[in-house]
Length: 298
Image (cartoon, rainbow, N blue to C red; front, side, top):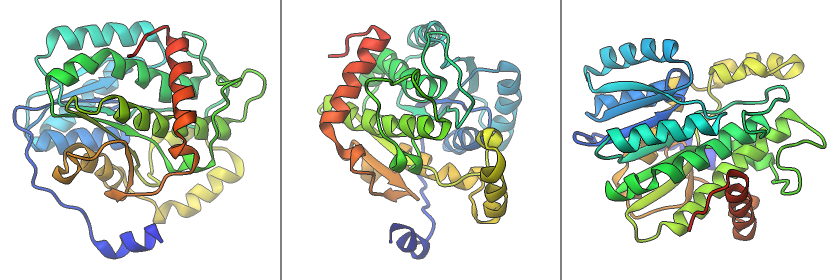
């Protein structure tokens, strides 16, 4: 029903401007991250494109500058699969930026073969959840000082099929790449819910979202029958530009200023799974995340 309603609602359009605002987007050298960067730069924001591959990022920066006619776009190196890189990146941002008004946790990996991050986390939960959890933690003081500010985390409808395995969060006993991806996307929803509760009254709000089924590089790990069906479905999927719209909506829509912790799809509030609303599960995941990252988040 949500999808049917969206078909008849019309496209979301906003003239919101972002002059004097700073936006940071992870994984911004391709796909919906790059499209969001271009949109927000066009609105006048200073845009920091945080990317693992700087050679690709530099080309993306040039494209975003050309499209937006905004020269205040920069790239910085960030590897979300390495907490040392995350800490170095956050230190550079905290020392070099006077403000941070919008943090978009966009980067991700999808249904990849089993692998581990530099810190021993299963790659999908490590990048999609733990990496962004730590990054947000390290930038939170700057976000608070810059308020009102927003944290936007890109999840997926795949979270509907996910569960959090608190006893084997890194899938060391058994690994199903689709299940691990769904777990990481559910973790994004739960993180946003917990973050919003902890940040009440600080001027920082949080949102998670499903961008839609988007034609991006994330498809590269699909195999066999999945790849076949995704090719068949391609005419009905979103382009990266269309897929970026809910990210931009959560970043700039004025009506969301007093909302926090919600889940969005097609530029509107949407229903997440029952597990995504489970505050007890969210708290357990929060505690596990802090312990795994060796941080204390009051």
